[in-house]
Length: 293
Image 1 (cartoon, rainbow, N blue to C red):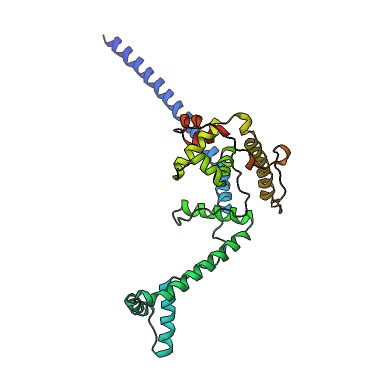
Image 2 (image 1 turned 180 degrees about the horizontal axis):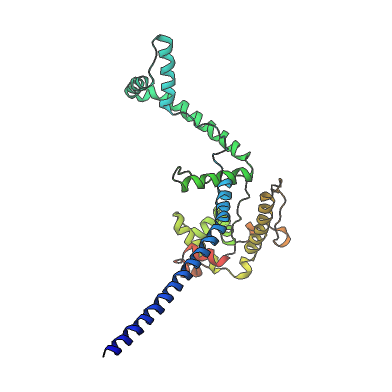
């Protein structure tokens, strides 16, 4: 019995020793793997830092645009006049907070007729400012607008601003689809308006009627609109590339119409029987648009 116990203890010791040795090897492997991963992380960290630094460098720290200042409100005009009157009548030094309080009380007590001159001046200044702002925006280059929009996007992400990106007023406008050319043609002609829309004046229902007319047309009848839409799409792509490259003179007054004999697209609105329209007038404008492409 004693020898069996001794043998059992001896075997157990061997098993424990083997397990300890295996555990030690596993720990060493984990440490080596961890060290290798850490080394890789350290090696790749400069690359990540460089990428973040590069992105940070590409984001402007502040806006470089200098648009015309906003026009003053009627109250601001009154307050300016009030300050000037006080300075001409009194020698005492004005406290801005107290001055605003006193002027605000006086402005609130004015009648509508007394406020009218200030409102009129404010409106005139707003209109002038809008014209100046539109002229200023036209002076911006594509790079100016791109840089400003990068700045605004970063500001929104940081929660520092809610300004939306600005649209480029100089960029070529996207062309109409064939269906919307057709719809535009109808709306531009009082005779076609009466023919297609009848007495219907609601825009949404008019669009349904126009979509029904479009679907009732044959491929041959749609062809002039489809051809013109394709041509204008090609012109747009060319103009867009020129604009993005900074090339001026992308606009053109040359007619690129590819209709037979140079005929205007206004001649191509076929007559469709009313039965065809009534059968499909319940479908939407969007269906007509999708089928035009």
